[in-house]
Image 1 (tube, one colour):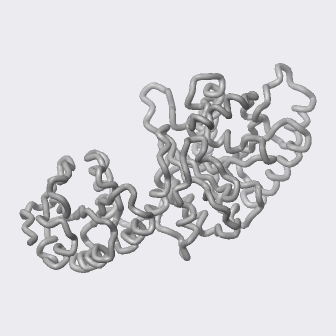
Image 2: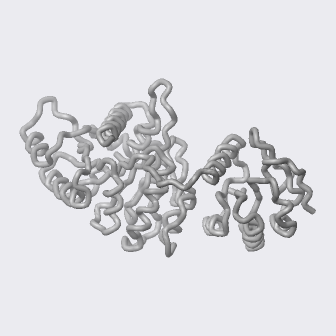
Image 3: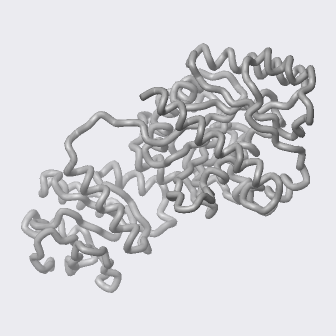
Length: 389
């Protein structure tokens, strides 16, 4: 029997009453039944006065049907948020969102985080429709040849951006997206295994909603959330331009910085990355073949985005004390100066991967180098933004 007290503007909680959440200023009342189906049978009267319904679920068919009935009873005016075990399969989480759940959160979500999520959902519900605006900065990382360390730079730059040490610096949200579908290993830098999120997105026959994309990102514990490349072999044609554009848009809306580790292959779905990128970080070494290949990559990508800003990073190279003729020739050929020199340190890199802690998170010369690179990126992006306005 549903017997929730009639408290105006209160949250209705459907589940084990002993887990009734504490959600700040907005009171939460228990529905008196652990099943959403009982709430659906009670109809619109039981839902009146509750802008939000939190319900515990395992994502079964009964709850999916009850959710549809409840949404119908409220005319879509009530926000339904599912609380589920953190091991809930992605397919079930997807089914809940497709059935109308505004979000799927873990059962043990902390009160402040829950309050922030609900406030955001309600604000979006109340706000008038508006043209989406760009939020986060997209930094695409490409490499001039295999083995030059593009993923190493991407992972460490992400950590450096997330760990801003300036006094009173606001927390920075950083995502790392591994689009090297067949050989990507960005997750190993953070001791993260593939959780199947990318495969799940590629299995869809239409672009996914943003919440489904962001839920696939795994927390590294270092301020960086990672969407890993699939652990199994997939054809590069399994990715599409529309899906890449949807992933970037979702991450851009949820994070301050999105680092994209790009594949070396030339594919049609690379175009949305280049179009969205605020800057391209081109990782190379100083060899003549590598510099020539870097020039080809720049020319190719600038066919898609003529004004794409490019930062050249010399990885595993020590900056010469005096400018060499070869360096001057390389910079003349590329039409840009070297933005950063990252010295050789393969033993430290291997140890960092073994520990699942990128070098930028540990004391040492590499951390200082990557923090300088991160500051350079922030300054460059801010300068571009001011110029654009």
